Image 1 (cartoon, rainbow, N blue to C red):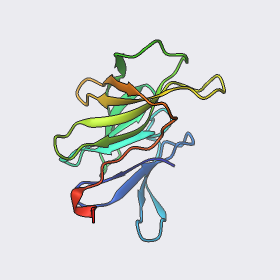
Image 2: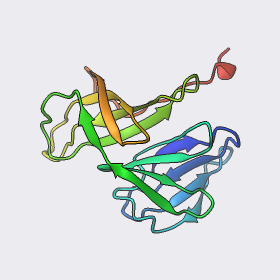
Image 3: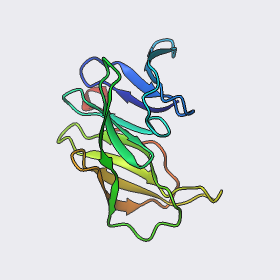
Image 4: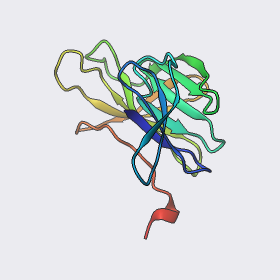
Length: 159
């Protein structure tokens, strides 16, 4: 499984199969059980980076493309192929968004971009912003550590 994300109003957790099945699941937050919702979404590599926006739209970064998925019907809609702005030369032939999250205060979507890894060596990761209208990925900065997860914690959840 990859790409856990929480619906902003219902609190339901969703995930996608990253094993080539391209299935969408609902996750029970109490038991951890995964319930299959939709199959065969044709998203390359499942939903690696996923996030909801405040209006309840789920966005999925699947390999080199950005999609929305209708959570009721499972119908995917392609936004476009990702383009990359402000990066040094990539060392690998494929980049992926390993995680995405939406900042609640202004709706800006951040992600963790992995510079491939096809060579079998660990490659750099970058904090990025994701333009949901154009699929443009903009470099904010390179991490000194390899990163994978990213989330905003609602202030209501803080002590």
